[in-house]
Length: 322
Image (cartoon, rainbow, N blue to C red; front, side):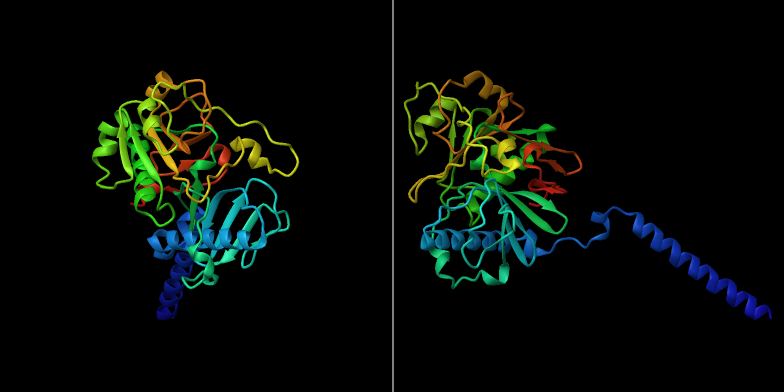
């Protein structure tokens, strides 16, 4: 009888332990219960897959006479690539598929192979970079989609960490092989530039915004008044709620256009901005906030990124992935 009692107590304790472990597991946030994303999402192969997808998309649009969709973000999981559109569009060329509303186009990654005829096409999403990870997915955004400067806010080292990740991916990644980056003013002499560790003919420095503009591929005179004004508001029909939040119309240069990003301190930008059109640079990334910023990306000390009007959750920002 004593042995039976002891055995029953042992079994009861084991059962209670298993139940307690299950309860604790269920109380964990979803992100803590999921296995971490693998290299198919976090590694270079994800960028190569997104690049093949966008090239295949560009080729499909050219083949069917369809204007490229107004893409502002891409989400890459282990088996699928999803594009988010700012304008409703259901006419996705094969192998892409549209959702019912025309807000998302998607394709299975296995459909995107190096042998696809479309992989030699040039896609127009010129400054698409990784924002970070959400659950098991890699989230990217086209910085060129913003119609005014993009502000990185948060602690100084955290914002520099994310800015470095953007610049490094633009200069070394497959998605943006033609992109030029100019570090302006203090951004060219600070820890941001010193810690990049990249030598590239596509990385430039300039003391002032006017100097950067005069040497940019678009070109302008050094003393030309220059700043970045929002594009005229489009007709309300045919655009999503996100379109109204992220501001401006999509603009993509031609096949021979050289996309360029300027990176500078927000305080210097405030001193040097000028009343002219935002067409000499495809995007301007500010270290710090600015009243006229189109997008605000807030970097948290926990590695999360608040994307504001973009409306995309980021659990681990790109600077933490390097």
